[in-house]
Image (tube, rainbow, N blue to C red; front, side):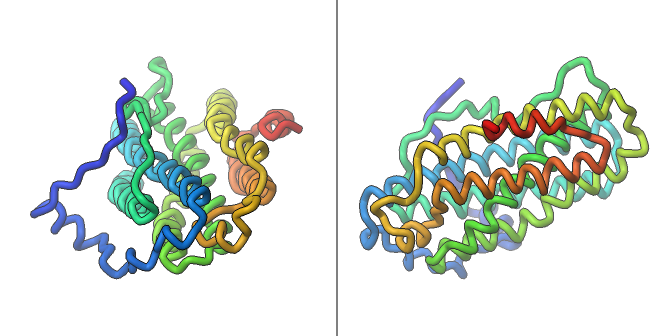
Length: 276
């Protein structure tokens, strides 16, 4: 059921335990003063960063599903441990992005169905096939796309706090991006042609979920009257740059590595994603 998206913080022993591994006090949150930017730009930035909050919150649910699938499939224990560690990373990313939103003036209203955040594999597959599909969707598509597009945006970002938040998130994403490849290095010994073809279809389905991002960028245009410097200060990348970046990440960082694993996505499917 879709409900207003609200985050809570308990504090006390729970926060103390969490803070040992994931501190935030070293970031200068007060350095981000929204009043120095055009109000329209701040409103857009709040929406963008709120989208990041929801995406990172969804990643918590995604990795929870992945860990459950890995456990049911009895994959190597260290792979389960690696994926388990990512859950706290994603919680930290939600917190960081939320704090940016608050510095920009507060969260815009957003309704989310938190029971439908993670992908679900078909019910008639084996535990191994379920693990394959969820790792592919999360580890080989979602995390790779997120990390691959965020890194160049960080490089364009001018404000020290925004850049520091991106750097902290990307430090974790570098490990997340490796996970899918490591899993399939192991799983490749047990994949047949039919399973590879099924996974290729799942990859296309996963990529289609991201198509609205670059389609929206195509219609939104660039930073317009805000000025590139002000826009880049808040982590904005112009529409044409984002579209080119998204296509490069999809082709080079997702489609090509999957093809090397035998999970081949037809070129016409990739072209259709970008309206070619």
